[in-house]
Length: 123
Image 1 (spheres, rainbow, N blue to C red):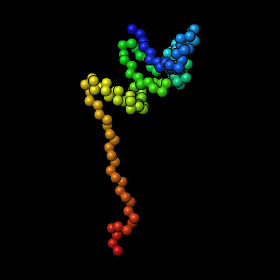
Image 2: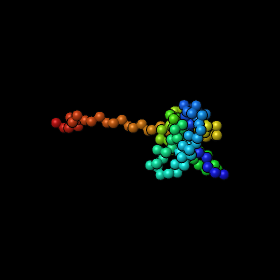
Image 3: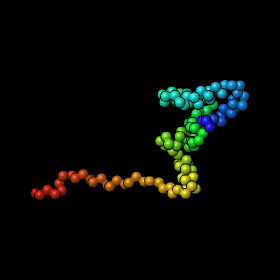
Image 4: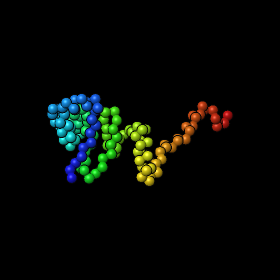
């Protein structure tokens, strides 16, 4: 079947894209092809002026990405996710029969107050 590429297109460049006479095509192709390069090259080559390539995968597989702040990332690579996206994910999972709860960090027991040194001594 082939491969699919996910990219963010910046709406600020719609005018340029409408008038494009070949400028963005080569830049988009280079960004897509650069995704396979070593990581040190990826950040530099993924942008194509009017957008940014986020991920690619074989057409038989789904790609779950989070897009925001003129960028994006694969969900599996996300270090931080906005509350808005988390709510959307929870709602999606619940529609598919999953129960979603937030794990809370266990509370630490109170730290004992250090002794001033006079307690427990016999005079």
